[in-house]
Length: 142
Image 1 (cartoon, rainbow, N blue to C red):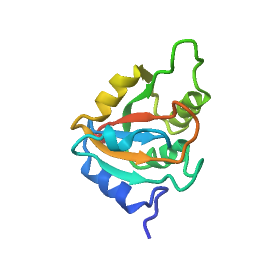
Image 2 (tube, one colour):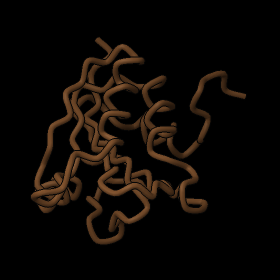
Image 3 (tube, rainbow, N blue to C red):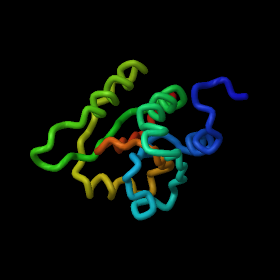
């Protein structure tokens, strides 16, 4: 048995192949994975049922394995407040020692970036909160 917080074999394999600058999407349950997937991306479905497994759980596990240098979220419609989950992401980053600023991208720009060749992994979660999609850019170990 692997002695880390993250033990999912497909996720470990995809992260092991990804390098500095690769993108990893933690997708909520509504994200259109099949129509916005880049050609190099592996997909892991963790959406067992609504709310299981959530994006925060996945983020916390990933932060124990790889360095993250940037993070992006999908912008909300005009007049809608910032989703609470964004504060939870910031808290996860801070608790792991990563001082990450969340970059906010327009919805279709977000889809466009996920569909690039730089996206190595998409993890579809059972997250039910809106605007919970989080696109990570992996950092360097050195």
